[in-house]
Length: 270
Ligand code: MLT
Ligand code: MN
Ligand code: ZN
Picture 1: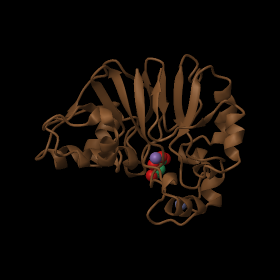
Picture 2: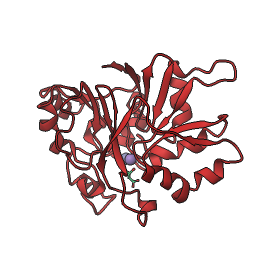
Picture 3: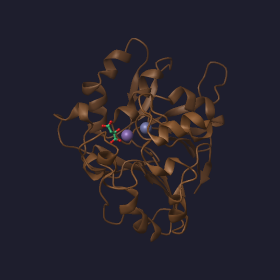
């Protein structure tokens, strides 16, 4: 099976429209440093391609994926799988309103947030139909109960999951290290939002730590990932993460451990 990396940035992308931090300024100066919101297209069997998460960049991401070139007036997109209900992973559903219908797979908590929190079922009803379906050939492994900020009063549930497709584990939001995480995987795309735990505070955009925001920093996961037999690549990089600079010496610290950052446009197999 194979996937196409369509985006590797956390919410806001790189550059983020209202930010001139070194990562954002660097991406404005050097276009090859730009990153779209984290997403992959996964081919679960020949001819069945799912987008994993529906980002604000979704239309551009579909254009970039040769597997998703439309055929006549028909899309080749089989559906969308949501690993959480964060705005940067769900708002793209609205952008697909031209679809005849849209097949979506998600946990109950995420589905309810899309309907009740975002109102997207009702808003989209005059345009297209969201058809929620059971998992088939893919699984969502629960990772944490961290809710999106807009759903803070919602019930407990499986809010954040990793997508498992055979030997692939796609986990752009890893707030806690669950027992046995990734032990039987061949390929893992994992949360690289922040380099260190204090980054949101030192960058000045939050009073919370990385872990407090639901993201284990790279410094807390790199040795654990290096101990796994799987090929492990970071994704969902925030614009404050020094890894958004390809010249950062920190890339060598990952390479020493056999790790790296997922490259947009890469096709990976497992
Ligand atoms: C996240 O990845 O934790 C969210 O996108 C952050 C947020 O917008 O609350
Ligand atoms: Mn996010
Ligand atoms: Zn920035």
